[in-house]
Length: 367
Ligand code: MRU
Image (cartoon, rainbow, N blue to C red; front, side, top):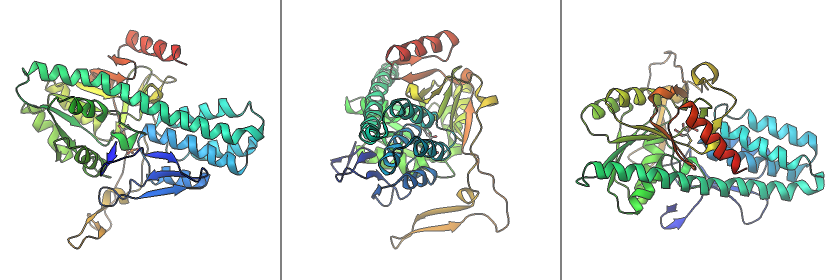
């Protein structure tokens, strides 16, 4: 996607061929800065501190993390060390393990002397495939937006609610939940996006709003608690969110607050779609509520907030009384019964057992 007219991906091999460039997402929307990763440690810290975030981008970053580790030491021992360090950097995104396992299956059969160049090529493939998958998700999801437009006799823009940031910043390009919106907008379907601010880190207010604004997509930022009210008042035609991990049974783990939006959508008969590449599906588990450990992050993400001051500086301020405890769950699980469909690179699949089997078969055909 473009930033001030220049096309960007979120991650790429730098011109020196030895470092990896990423957009520092902790500084957006106020500062756009590209930073370089030179070592495995840079990548681990970048994922942990959310310089990059979003399940597909975490997976692509892990691929490059292994490549940087192999360029320093291509031994089996160094590979295993890098695998474990990256795996521990964020616990939820299924794409992290998926990418690490792929790097392992490609690299370990090779002689150490061959590993570095193949590691960089495989990391590049993971990134390129993510772009193609997100583009396909966009096409399948665009058809849903088109249907919503037709069902209002093309009389007004389609209102879509999204949570957190599942746009191009969360992937390598296009996004998951936002890809259908970009594709619809680019083909002339009028859309308007309700952007949940998404406390505590405000990925909606800072990242989704920034992306949509740069692409010219009409949008309105709302506080997280407003979604139920606007759905009840007929102001949302469909919800589209992303996922960090979806189970074989179709339960969806996503940014904290997603579950509440799904409940409100269910009560108001608003279709609730989840857009994700198949690499986000954890085929080893069925029941997300029982089986997905939920990441808890630093309480300071709740108690402290940062923003732009009137004299143009980014500053942090304390929100809560000194001494009040805060608990910071980063994700929640939306049970499959509240999900209308999973929008994947292979099409739209309701999260029913026979449909999940079909989706798995489609994915396996492609391997
Ligand atoms: O904690 P984050 O910012 O890495 O979490 C990302 C999300 O939860 C997004 O909502 C997204 O849907 C998953 S990645 C496309």
